[in-house]
Image (cartoon, rainbow, N blue to C red; front, side, top):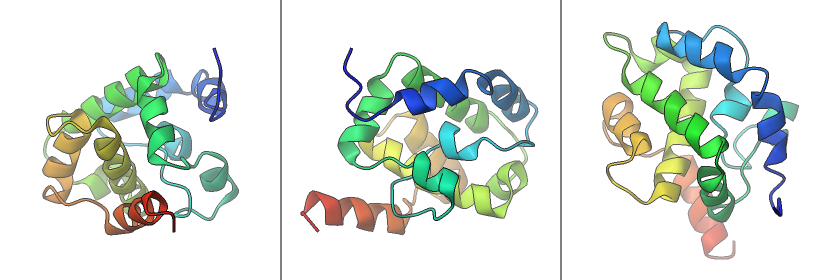
Length: 147
């Protein structure tokens, strides 16, 4: 199987952290450091080395990520776990900075899923009043228009 987007970079790092990450979310609060590769953002938003390494470069790459048998399943399961948390704001679950990353990631993957009933759209509705992250949308639009 061809790995046009080097999605193996996610598979490899998630192999050792997924179980702990999903457990944290099922307990209602992120505690360790896995945000970059569990809920990746669009390239150009994060400036840290990890943010750059695990950035998604295009809508096409995000679609490939969702179509990947492990990665698509994991991000869906992680998002479902977040959506099931009751009585906590997204900032209480992730902290302020990671809540912004989650917003960006949900925007990207809701657009990649192109399904208004997706778990990603549900997360946007529940935690962000249905609003997409403007920076993510603007960057994606610029790339789609060749900017």
